[in-house]
Image 1 (cartoon, rainbow, N blue to C red):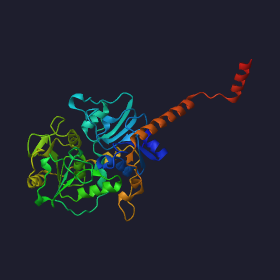
Image 2: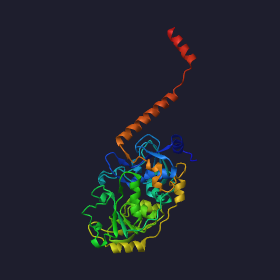
Image 3: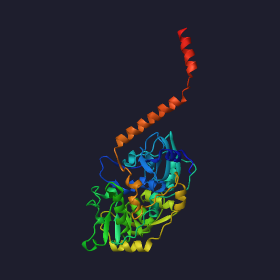
Image 4: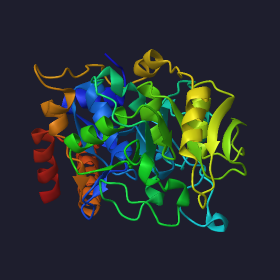
Length: 379
């Protein structure tokens, strides 16, 4: 059994307190990369997972996603998490605030997506050296024999979409995603959006698995492809070249820093990518040839990542005659929350905990002592 406050809490309470970038009450969809955070924790622990705020005084865990920079307060156990170098990465460049570990926060870093996130989350403390996105472990639980339907799957980032429908609707200005009529039976545009629920996640993953090759702007598009052994390339947008190239990985190499983090965590110094300006149509045949020429299977030390899991390892098994997605622990996961209510309940629980702690620390007076105190007060 794992010896930690978190593992002890889970054994006592029967669920995992996890903070993740989940869907809110105003959202009618999931970003499956984010939603796989509670799924992966449930798959490895066999436990129900309940959402906690990232900013809290409570004990909690963090898993999938570039979310580490959003945590504040309390004891947090990081496993496979990514982190931005900015507290507010969505702000304009001149308004961004560098991320440092917040005072009063107890960060326990067991594994990160890669060395960039590790440097940020450890705040200069000795690193664990354990890397990997937990979604990479998904084929251990779900690897169906799916017939290939598409020669190429093109996985786009949420920022490139016009809406959050499950079908990918690309912004009209992004010419590189235009597919000529003669190739529409061969190329599938895919986003990471699904209806709320684990079956929606499964259907999106099945679509990806039905592709012979993958090119992806999305980080988790790359994780899905690499972990399932689908030949793939990162579809770069911020480089000054077109076509296949090999990039020296560094924090200022021009690639998405999340991609640098992931592949540096695999021990790679250089990464083949496909550059394509967003305002020019893609030569899809050339891109597919580039994938076939450049891709090699990537290896992650999965056992080391599993060993770093902060909870008792009790993996779920698929029900007889069904898939892992039909397991009651997964179908019972709550994947959409009212964030305001989530914060209110968290503060209420912390107040109750503080009250109990104060009562427990107060000296108890015996009934006999209380009697003599009353007598002396009367005198």
